[in-house]
Length: 283
Image 1: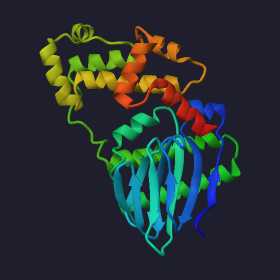
Image 2: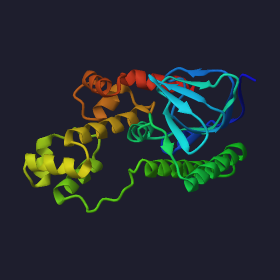
Image 3: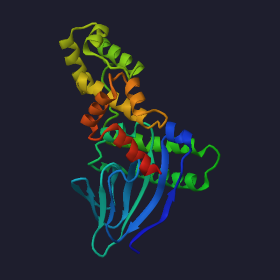
Image 4: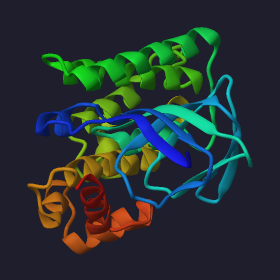
């Protein structure tokens, strides 16, 4: 048998779905009784899967993770190399969905993809039901099915947020100084915000803002601003109508060179490499 993709259903999303929605690129089951290797950036998006039967391991970047049936599910960043290794003489069967959408890189960063998700029985049943529904939508493609695909993928991401404990409600709303900062940055995420501008908006001193922001948001103000600009950059780089120079200008960088330096420093690749790898994988 070697590696069988007979039960994998592939989809070519519409241009609107690629730009605006969570969209499925493939969904189904893969059975393998030999190693299956994928290079980094060989496919776009993310891959969420669970093991149906068999055991083995997953080499994911520099990690080697044990695979087997049960409560565990995995979310993989397909920018990283990976190899599925079934146990000798056994068949490893995985069931999953490969998907993409605006902001997928930010989701992968936030969900700590090196660790498996341990889902309780009710959420496991929900994942199986969503998988069956996605297969039906991709194979039949009823009217406006891409919106239904979008909502189902969003449900899966909600389950993963819950499993990571990232949806815990805060005991209190952020202080007014922090709320003013969050609202200003959300209104113009592409702007190159300076600490002095935000301090004036906050109405408190810089030291007070720095302390209360870290306490209530779990990251420093600088980390928050960097993450926001990276998210905006990735979103714009996904639009082929914009040149790298135009992306840099919309993000308030003084030059394309400075933008490339910023992007590579925080992601490990240049804007051109990020765009070209994504385009090649979708070709």
